Length: 215
Image 1 (cartoon, rainbow, N blue to C red):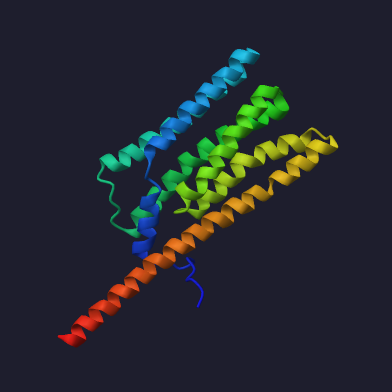
Image 2: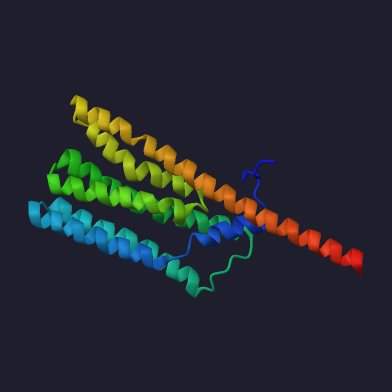
């Protein structure tokens, strides 16, 4: 028998998935500082104010997410209903999308609008490093995974294609499969955890039935 799928998630499991989005807030803050440092280093190298602006946009987007997560925990860190979970997830997606777009813009600018070798290396490295964390951090929201997957690598791929030389176009096209790998990996993690939760609940139900039968 295959693992149960997550198309129709029970309310309590969905709430747990959304709750998991708000773990490890410190990673978001550390990431934002790293974005700012490398963005500022690019500015020092190029003296281009656009990169300085991007550095602060990246930091601001990360801190926006960080303080939102901290606010959730200060409010008790509990979710009482599916409706509340949906609202919290939408808020999380909004802030995550802003961060993804900011980092994707950094890639697009460094590769196409204001090309610089160090800027390209820094922006693409940050995007790929962030993409690696998406599966473990955001599996609780497949919409967030999909948005991150597109915003983190899509602008870099588009910028390479717009260069219109064969090598860059091929490289840009080869980046797109990363989005599908990330989405499928997150879906796999989600299904595995869903199966574990359902299995635990079923085991608990069987235990209670045996207890009733013995008593």
